[in-house]
Length: 91
Image (tube, rainbow, N blue to C red; front, top):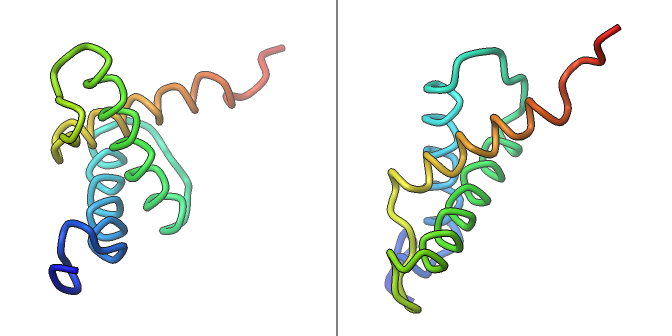
C-alpha cells in the first residue's frame, strides 16, 4: 500500500468520489437532494462509468482509469439520467 491516501487506498477512492460528486452536483442545475453517502456513491459510480465507456471507445488502456474531469462528467450524466427516470409523474 502506498499510504493512507495512495491510489490503491479505499480512503482515497472515497475522498475523490465525494469531491467528484460535490462538483457534479454543483455544476448540474436543479435540486439534487441527497446525503453525503449518496454523493460519494455518485462520484465513484460516475468514475467507474467514465472508465468503462472510455475503455470501450478506446480512450483508455486496460490498466488506465478515468481522470477527475471524466469522473465529474460521468457523475453529471448519472444525475441527468436519475432526474429523467425518477422525475415527478405528470398528470
